[in-house]
Image (cartoon, rainbow, N blue to C red; front, side, top):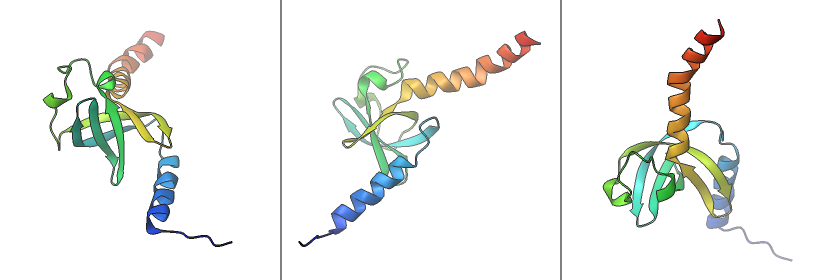
Length: 112
């Protein structure tokens, strides 16, 4: 039996290992690398990209990904990972950012 390891297979394995080590609770400041009719591809970390579908873009934006531009930065959170890649959400990231910045100090103050 012969096993052939190509550069593509090695790169995919390394990428899968990097993705497995990502903190799913963390919010990433990503850069849009491609605008598609159904969402945007975002580079969450160097070399690691994921899809943020239209439904997961912040509702304060106009509902078309064409309103975003390649190179724009957005905050994203990983909501799923699979063999197809990462699914990202700007809505989830912004919700967590709003809660952590606005509500937590108020909650702490109320408990005193």
